[in-house]
Image (cartoon, rainbow, N blue to C red):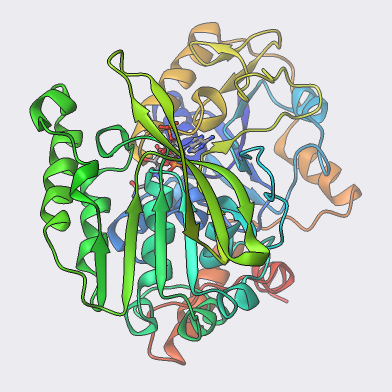
Length: 432
Ligand code: NAP
């Protein structure tokens, strides 16, 4: 039996691991990028060392002779889903959710209004990232919209000094841009209150630990009764304790991170350095309603961190309302021998470990259905890719890139420097 997994992020690699170790199946893991690891490389912030080190564990899956990495192959362009159906017994889609969401408000199309997804791509060295170097030398106040972990990551990366970030694998051009950044204040703007935020406590706490940066929070935004507001949710209770302590601190540093709760973005007037928000309140039923008032928040740059969304592939069912591939227990509805796991199955939520459970469950469904067809060999898919002039990067290619990144880091006393240029990655991966 041979299975294709589409997307070499955590859910794809966990799916491949389960297929190989539990069911002794041959697996080809495809990725449009020349390198594996998906959001572990291009989502997890560079200063989150322990989460990024999950990469070493994920890499072990490719030690199995049953699992191949087929990088730099874009499904939907280089190979179509129908090619996969022809060449594999089953296909597992695990390509995540990489698009951003929009607020739909006036001024959002301004050059200085960007998506957190794009900003994260830039600071993690994604080959398709827009370069934000110029943006950071034109902004003093940055408004980050959203109260999730991505918003917290973005605020922290904008606030940390280059000396702190030097210890990470952040690309050199990003480190240089951040070291020349003129940003002094980061405003975290949320339409709901402190008890409704989706960030987790460990991530939140880190904002208060950045040397030379104060966290500013209005104590009046905190609920009167923490136990009632957290309603048994331990993460919320801990978040409130952290924020209560911050609200008592006096801001003295010349750099700060300021929280603006109950502020729904209404209009961006970025030529005048302003984000206009409508002030909100929670009514007795727990519903969010406008107070009728509005405020202006200083903002030269706005970063929308309001969630990721998935996109469809030609020939694969897609739910346009929920932005996921519709499935039952991981089996794609309306397409034989196709399965789905991770963010493109359930939407952008959870931690990396959530994807393991998710992938294992989908692969178990695949095996309950077990439908072996007469498929072609690995050599035939290789021939097809060769015929289409696709430069496939295999796991040995990734090892070459890995070694070069460590070598590059060493030239500046860093453990590793991420290489961001696609052609460089391809050339190194192919040993050219
Ligand atoms: P998220 O947790 O869903 O947060 C999205 C935020 O956007 C929410 O505060 C939401 O507010 C807000 N929002 C949505 N629509 C809005 C609108 N129209 N106007 C104003 N605000 C709006 O998503 P995320 O931060 O992108 O994170 C995605 C997933 O990755 C999460 O599971 C997260 O935990 C995970 N992640 C984890 C880490 C880590 O563990 N270190 C780091 C990064 C990401 P409402 O609640 O009011 O809708």
